[in-house]
Image (cartoon, rainbow, N blue to C red; front, side, top):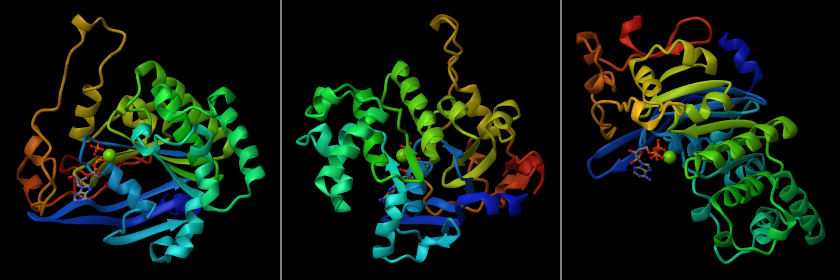
Length: 321
Ligand SMILES: Nc1ncnc2c1ncn2[C@@H]1O[C@H](COP(=O)(O)OP(=O)(O)OP(=O)(O)O)[C@@H](O)[C@H]1O
Ligand SMILES: [Mg+2]
């Protein structure tokens, strides 16, 4: 099974690891993560704040240097690429941020913001204008906003600028880092639909990061659940929702609010305990302090991912070691 996935993968990581040095010790933000994403597919990455989602996305793009491990893009190990080689790769590998407002220069017009990446790659002006108009139409930004500034637009339109900027260089792979988390629920659906349409029309592959499982449910082909730097479960989206195995994944699913219910009927459920910092983590299951099923077996080491069939993998002593 793994063999087949490897062949088709556009992006793969092997034991990808990022530790940050902090005054309190080494912080294990991303700890030996293996993943593979086939072309034109979406891998959703889910987990609470601080579990290492953004660090994983940024390390894959080499915006942050990995501590260890491999990043394989279309068969080439880009972990060893020089800055010059990475410059070419970055055309193919883009990122969309959570807060488009913070990542957009407030003094530039929509048109200039979208043209920026083209300028970096020295695309001639006439060509730039043509591409910008085309991309604005593609992401649903009316031509009349070309001379507007980001603060004059609502959150949904600002995120469309972010998406347009990531698209102008005709990438193949995009890290979407919480692209809808800052938006109202009604606008979230529009942006998710746009991303799904673009995937289809432009043949894009996504790593889609979110803390909100309900957001990745429809957009992801496969979902990976992270807890304090490690992957605790991975499965095709439908399988994960119908048959969650890890106690943490079950809690995440229980915590999804049911929108159809009246507020007074909603069962507000939050996961007990708090996430700690993964600084010099002890050799035990990282979820153990919050887990209702924790036994002696969980206190000796972090379990590795076990193949449960149906492309479903789980790292939990409940399912054997
Ligand atoms: N530059 C840095 N130096 C030190 N620690 C860092 C750095 N960047 C991130 N971290 C730490 O690494 C861990 C993972 O952070 P990261 O931002 O990847 O989490 P996240 O899952 O994206 O969280 P959120 O949902 O809040 O965006 C956190 O404990 C964070 O404090
Ligand atoms: Mg983040």
